[in-house]
Image (cartoon, rainbow, N blue to C red; front, top):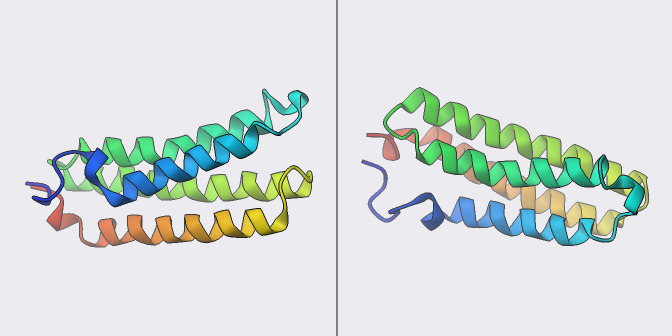
Length: 126
């Protein structure tokens, strides 16, 4: 059974961290120009939100260790995509380099958390 201390994916610190980062990026994206609404704004929101969604899906796959790891690998991939879009927002001067560096550091921490889950998947999977 999944680790006894977590009854749901909502209890996982990694999920809470992913959700907080997605919300932070959402709030930053509110300041992007209107002409970016259906391109950059949409992309950065989608990829950042997908990290938490993939973690939640992984939780639903704990009976299937390979699927569990696959979903967490997808979550980690979404982190890299989000970092790409974050760099793009800096290049477009929508956010500062300092803000981007802070986000990148927080996403690197999240990536390490996800990779710890992957490496300790036996503790999550039944």
